[in-house]
Image (cartoon, rainbow, N blue to C red):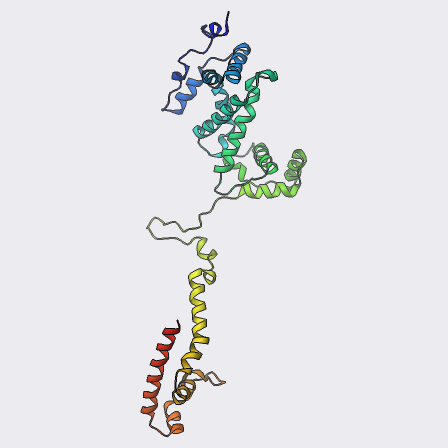
Length: 311
């Protein structure tokens, strides 16, 4: 009996097996559908795998994938405690299953279920690490391993607690030592990962409260206005105007006008008090106080024009 004849028997996948999986609908309906998919025998699995490997037979690939969708559902259930949607976990696991089918070699002497387990978990792990927090908690290979093992071990330590957020509870010193010994890592690495697991994402921008008013958020005290680009440019311009700009503006005045401006506004006394009064300058130059005021007004106007040109 040929392979194709064998595959047409009642115990094999029907030609319309793709139609058994609803494209849309409730997750329970999907899980129920994949659990009804018939399993492949060793002979069928190897036949399909060879057809895919030798002839790039996409129909054979589909039959391998469809018969192992229940495996993805089973594996994904192990990761429901991370607060991510079960449907998304299944979807990522299916991606891993497809990668496994593409790379599966029937000549290696192992069943696809054993080979695909690694690929399914790898895709789910990657999805969890990218989406569990806004900021990744594990980037290196050792950190990833510690992340998943520490979390599962913490669940064991807190098995008797009624707290649904047991993974956020701090470990004791003895538990840290136990984890470090069992996972063969440094206790400092366990403590660092414990800190990352115990933390939570914080919104930097203040969120509006029930009244619609903005609340006080971390961005309010994390912002350094001194190094804000616009503020820095304005500060530099003020410094230039107060030094080079003021010098050029004074040089544009005649000696008497320059003397009046300097004595009135620039020469501060040791006690912090202001400069000479209009009457003091009037006595020095032998003119009336009103005349000194007029000269001062004209000088200040001329200086403003010079400063505007300089800016």
